Length: 324
Image (tube, rainbow, N blue to C red; front, side, top):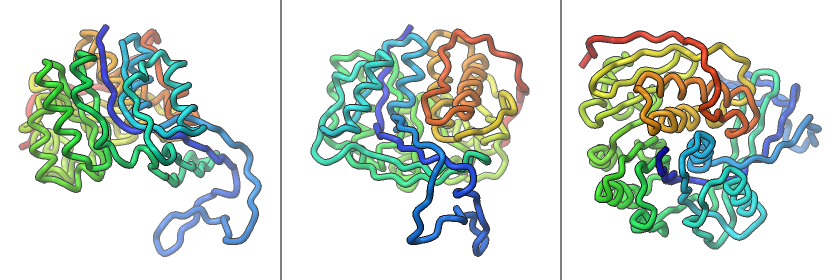
């Protein structure tokens, strides 16, 4: 097994779940939660308190797979911060490099329609709004095999410090950037020279390089990173490790209860498997299975797999030539 550092956000997620009051409606071409009226008091069916944030979601995937897992991020000294730390302890994740900062721990309110699985998320980033206090030199004490980084809210300087330190220590880097990193495209392209595995969705890929077809996007991104994975929601994914190229369908058609954390589950599930020495295609299939399991549960962590499950076959096509 490997020693993996997960770098990113930690939040408390509060789910408000209902079967009729959050039904979508169309207004001016936009889908909205149509039955919420200003000034009304709305009775909902269920409230659930979960721990979220891309950094902790990924860490749970690694830990359940048996890897030695360290989370680096920020919380505050409050009830939400205590919930985050308790979750890390329960999952046997090393929290000794978590920084306690002033203010409040980040919090998301998830309005979830139980019938459709659609949701709207209201987020206060709190302690996960800034990351410039985190020390890349901590990696020297940890000596990781892998650094897995999710969005740091566009803090390219902190990402660069961590990526450079990881490579100085001969650790590999997997990166799942967010919108705020992609919005700084010149800096992002500079960061990619220190990235071993890049994970983006189709919409994000099209903002980084030109192209429409998945094969075009993958081929162009592969000029910057050795291994690239592009997810495409229910349509599956496409990936290359510069040796093989695979187009995968969905792992299975399931009832989607909550899509929160699906991307985190795919990426961290892939690395959890690949870091054991598994074949590239087997790691991709496990990532897809992990994502399919997560969307069947409320919250981003309840459905995360352990790696001990028996997986069934899924649609996979090996592609011989990429479009450039």
